[in-house]
Image 1 (tube, helix red, strand yellow):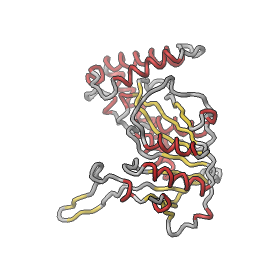
Image 2: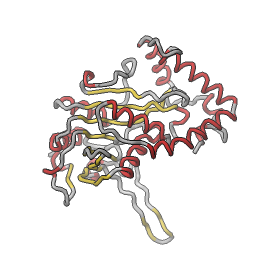
Image 3: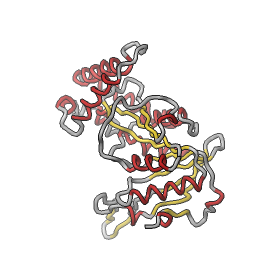
Image 4: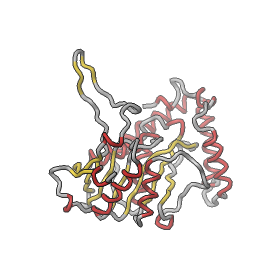
Length: 310
């Protein structure tokens, strides 16, 4: 099927006038720990000048029955139907630089066709670098800096070398295919994954979005102020800290994660780097139990749990 018919520019937009150096992608995936993508989207679209310039035809690529949109039943009529949309936004940063933001749910169907359609858009807009952003639940403590690991179509294009410590076989999100197809066509694409404490991954966690925006700057994307996110983050930090302080079990859990983090990531003083095999063993141990019940976590998920913070 013709990929050029899948994406369309808005009627009021002259696509020939659109130009930008960077595309940020926050399409949904199987995981968005801490609502990192949603927070980034809200921050960019509510604090910077932006407009919608294009969209994908959702009726061709979205599984409505599998992920039903919400609608309000107001006594005797329906209202406020939330149509799923994959939108391309033109955004202007505080320095006047234009970049683009692709938002929306992960497409359900026609992944290859969607990837081709987006590759054509990247070429039409003159995009030099595509940055893919998301959050991932990980065995890290909230008391340490959130790690942001990188992946890329061409690993040599990563500016800050902070990659996953080993090789893993996992279920692919659409953004993995998009990364591959853009790279196959010679385009520069880098993925940024914020590692969010697994006991907080269901929260809206602004520190995850802040970590991603810092990484965007490090990877030669737009420099985006995040003062508004800092204002949102502080009450969440205080709430989590208070709940941990009030529960001895939570203190023990966090202390254990801190020791593991310091040993595996910074070797305590931060002057030595652990071997890849050591870190890989830690990550594989966590991934092997992903989705299984965690008795220690369940014991902490009551009124005093950080999972109920905010």
